[in-house]
Image 1 (cartoon, one colour):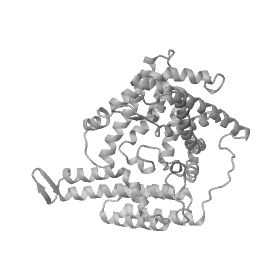
Image 2 (cartoon, helix red, strand yellow):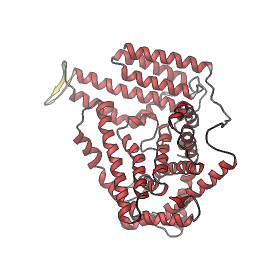
Image 3 (tube, each protein chain N blue to C red):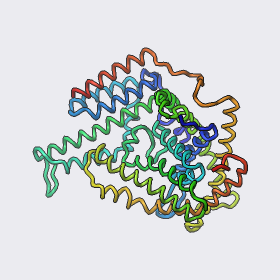
Image 4 (cartoon, rainbow over the protein chains, first blue to last red):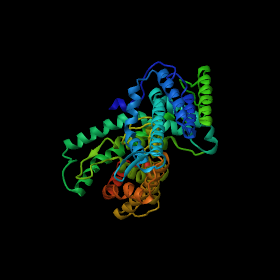
Length: 264
Length: 191
């Protein structure tokens, strides 16, 4: 589980998609989302499915990982399908039983809407499957940089995300340690009535919060001792570079997605 | 440009991490086994103050959206499509509201904490239900009436959360004064 948290859904591989600049991937995904809401025909979805399959093939990610990412949203996909099947009316009656009936339009709308969800989920999951969380925060920071002028603290947000990522496993371990330590001193996290149970949480929460404040002080001091003063003029070890392949992939994908979105 | 002090930046980040950790700590209570996550939203509001609480919850949302499985059903950008994503947005705004109310209150009593938490909870549900309604109507394109959205998004789950509100309010005063005592000269004194 700890490992899951550290790397998220990222699957390390050496592929064209993995090696793309995260900004390129985020840009293509944004166009993908716009285009999927513009498409009005099943033919359009067919052409879009080809695009998704090509990306999956190029990313060398096993299809089963993508199917796995659909699972948490399976409920809403099926819900959409079923509601449309029985509620949307129009066209020929395909199936009929007592007061229930499935009509042509319901089947069309139901499958169209659920396909839309499936495509959206599988394509966006490709982003997190092929890009490590750190790369992603880095890319987001660079993409949001222009919005600094209107007051968006892009660097600070990315920095906080990185720190939070780094400390989730540490704090999880710490919480477990505190619970064990307090149990050894006789704290009871399970018994008692409601008020008692609420009170039992105090010996867990107080050290957790105190440690968070202490750690924040120490870490801030350590950062400032190393001359951290926000994003300005900060240099980094791995600088994101938008290479030729990034330009080519981005331009081709955006043209493809725009054409599909506008004409189909 | 919004200026965030380094110490505040780290603190908000750590509370974001704590919120994520809270989801993994289960407290067994009959009928409503809950995780500490919602408690951390309440405490972020009361310990960090409105602004930092909001930022910390936004950071929590951010790391969930880039694919770290810290939400109830995992994570990743497609989580926006979940009908329940509105509650997560509500957490951020709710933490802000709780912080704001506590900042403006002189007496730190049970009733005041309860009122602050209840207002925060109201915000969480406001965002949750409205999002649920629009999500089902537009993303899933499924016609659902507002009254039905209120029923499944508010009336069914509210009782457990009300209980949590009371629990959080019961221990807020103790927790906050003990944290303050432990940190006599450190970051908390102005809050």
